[in-house]
Length: 171
Image (cartoon, rainbow, N blue to C red; front, side, top):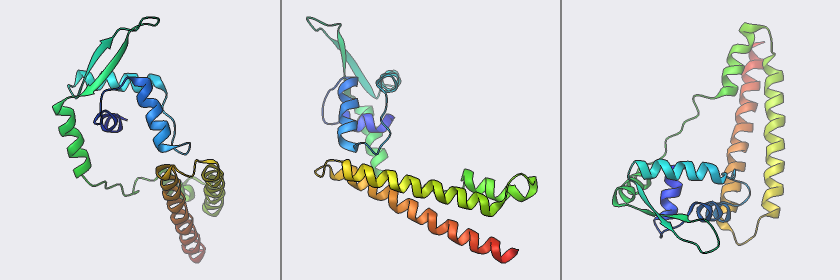
């Protein structure tokens, strides 16, 4: 959450609730919505580390609000984030641990685990399809997010099929 908030502040000052709304509008309903408390906690941490600065702004009929802006250190952290490619191989996969350890425990069957996971992925794909249909057509970012998630799920389904083929050969 840190770096996406910095990225939103790069275009100009904002308060926490504005940042929450901006994230929701940008990413659409497929992305897990952050709660405003999480955003304010993160903003506090960013301020303590010197990546942003906050300023209290008086409001006539409400309590003061704190408006944040990016510091030069925050801008540098953001540049570094954009320059660094993401390398997230899924070697530490919880499902694969279950699959690998199931025979040793005698508590779960590997093929049953694969079938259960396959059902989960298919249900998730159906949910994403419904989200895509309900999402505003003009929100290209949200549609790309949903499409990316569905492509990852399809790859996971293909991998499950491969696992099942390999395990059935061992029997």
